[in-house]
Image 1 (cartoon, rainbow, N blue to C red):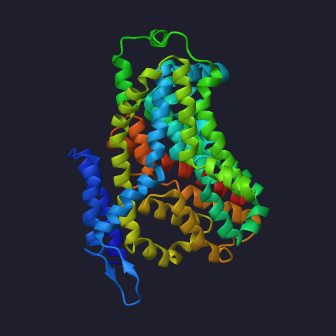
Image 2 (image 1 turned 60 degrees about the vertical axis):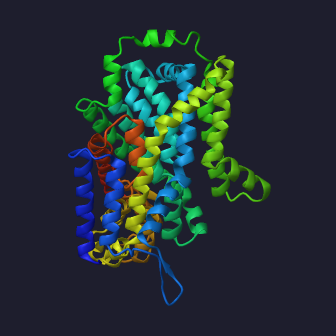
Image 3 (image 1 turned 45 degrees about the horizontal axis):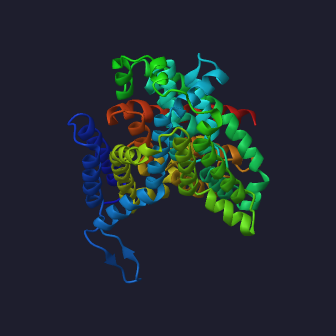
Length: 467
């Protein structure tokens, strides 16, 4: 199937999947896998591998599903496991509570939701948002217990804070790749990199404000499993903290989180600054999320040893794997759906018909990127693909000056966050770690990314009138 019929089929598939999960209570893993299989076959993916006359192999549906599943484990599986293990150790030793106390003392007890969002925004400048959420989740949980603020509000604030810098501010790969494509070369993009970064910070502001207001509003309406657990707990925060005895020191509590962030930041800097030789190899290796989080685990284990709880390490690891298992499999199922969609002609159809919406100026890159993001799930893929389509049209759209080209990078970034749903691994990381059901995820994470993207685009449009 091709053309408009494929678009209609995609919409039907997403609706069926949502109904299956929310209304008929089918497990998300089974619902996503079933929809992926039926959609793939209906869209024309062959039953088995087919080798064309040119020697090109078209993957069969079973291979596509397998590649989508394994690809997710390759990209984020180990990151989730290591990050969750760090988080569990921080909870076991009481370090998460220590970090919560430090944040409250630094920023005050009245604005924990804002503090969580800003923390996410800063961390995701050098770190992928998936990794950032896993790393910061134990602090979020401790702050929820410390301040009695809605878990939903804190989850959405962290998620949107991470997401904003992820799509707008280099050195994350998406905006760098988009800038390289739109400016014509890495050298030209490097010349205007500070402009892109500055506009990224500026455009983040309306996105953060809109999503913060949404987080606070939705937190009053929806209660997650974490909220229910906190409400039913008979222990006060002080009693919970007292159960740990003396809390760890500030440095040793922070090290398992800050060390991976620093290593990943150095890896990004080494790549962006085009270091060469041994320095590039060393920091690229240490900055790989798996290696960086592995270093964080070592510091967490040292923390357990200092707390004289190393005998609980095996049990802690075992419990972490039990909790992480369902998250991994649901996230991988989302990767399958994204791979199946990418293996159809849906994206190429959207690309071929891009001229149909090219008359809307600065809104064109936003709409195109939003369509690509919603269709295939990855913000980075949406940034890269949309920038490749828009680049030849910059002159036609009157977006070919340096400032307007940088604004186009921002518009594509705003579209690349609109919206996060079931085919996006980040959606499942946020909903599962946040203790939400998939239905709650659509009402919170999906809607929050819509609000965030639209607010950012309003800011971009205003800047386009001025600059």
